[in-house]
Length: 133
Image 1 (cartoon, rainbow, N blue to C red):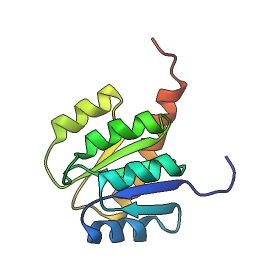
Image 2: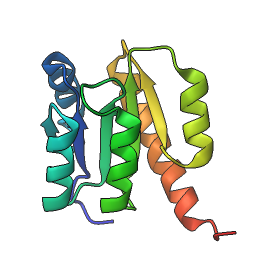
Image 3: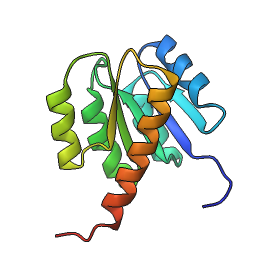
Image 4: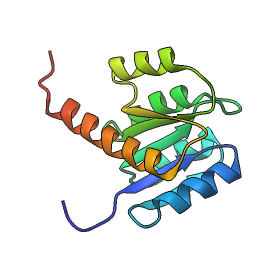
């Protein structure tokens, strides 16, 4: 891989969360952000992103619905859900099905976010290398 930073699209309807995530990621990643799923889909259509980190609970569309639609636009995109709700069983099922590559529970901290991104990248690379059965 070249020295270019991965580009991450951050989607959350809470500006404080977007600001926190952008601060955490700015030294290692390029980030873009938006506050709605519809804006995220428009950005995905028009631009290349390596990763999508989306809040789970948003008006008009859940984060999992956004990830499903994003995968149709960019099948290779690494997908992470950010959630303040205890939905571990739902997230584990989404991981097993390949719908997402990792999830982060809010509140969170810098180390947890960076580790979750590394795990998601490794999981996505592993799935991409696996032969389809």
